[in-house]
Length: 544
Image 1 (cartoon, rainbow, N blue to C red):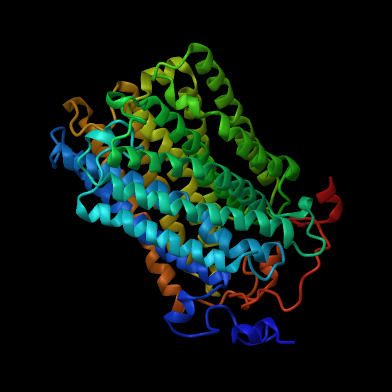
Image 2: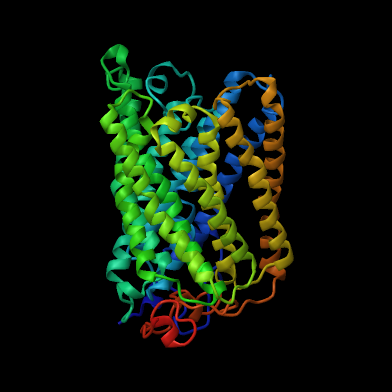
């Protein structure tokens, strides 16, 4: 009987051939079913979308240097709208699941690939098609509705390219669903012998919970945008009150997905931080079971808090109180993770390598984002700050300060495994510090602006707010530099970086038992797991 390697026309798994050099030419990459190659394709695609969205942020931050602004209001509206659309739907949502999780989950559980390799490749093509539709909207002039597409403005009054952008997001949603489905089935059916649920890496737990949200939540936003397009084309009253629709219905549908989407973005990042903190503290994660189940608790609770985005829409007092309480409850499992990471570092042998610097940044910035979220979950303070820059700062502390810090930390942590090469440690530490400093200088002034009452999404502002806006723009410049520098030393490392070896960090986990880069089929022989996750130190210390 032909072996799997012979069927694919590749060397036997026992040969020391890694996934990067098995075949040559673009055709072998564009038609691959290797989860590792597909992850690299995602990394390239998502990075390009990140810089597209970032370029728009640079432009509107320059606009806000002066109270009168640089561009006409309609251009400013399109810049911040397209920045949000590209960053949320084409970078933040797929960033870790489609890249690092795609690469690592099969290796972490001792499998040769994901459960559905062809569907995995299909999900990347679907993502590319969706991105192209949205980039078409960008090129033709963009969208001016904000990333939330609020009706009836988006369904009736906007003259921008709403349909193209909405259709791009609709298509990309299928990519998210297929990725989540692949993760769920893979974790259930393809774990190596001995890889019980209580031995799964926390990164796998986080992405498993994320997969559940992707499969259950993404169809809601897809249907919502489809209804939006149908109303815009056919003029059937769904959301527009002028023709019998209900604009509040759009907000219910949109936020029913979009608040769980926050956890699609942040849960995988929490998994990354668990891996990094354990490795560079040289200890088992404190309270492993609590951290694992807190991921599942977040996934469940995320579906019942959407109403806190709608305190100012006229919903009943009793609904508002209920959503307020539920929103505070979802903070509990997030706090469990932060406390347990801190306890893991306590009395640990902590080393300050670049991934750990990003982990420190994540914990600090995400904590600020989470604590300020409590203000927005409280009726009185939310009503006062709802339409201000306070919300912008809170969202970015969670998403950029949290998820992007985790993504950068994970990329630095597993870069030696992905490429087989080490990068420049001095430059990477310098870049991590730039990102941390630039981020705080960019977004902390926006908390003050929001508290003082500066509304978001306005092209102009009173002169007394200029100093804080100039500080924010200066911080964005530093932040942008911090993101560009890694591109340089990562590319440099591909050719000139020292060879990493299988386990440069002396970390635990199956991914560190394979060669770097991994062989095409990950393992020569299916591994048998005989120890607990994060088995650092003596057994009695771990059990205790």
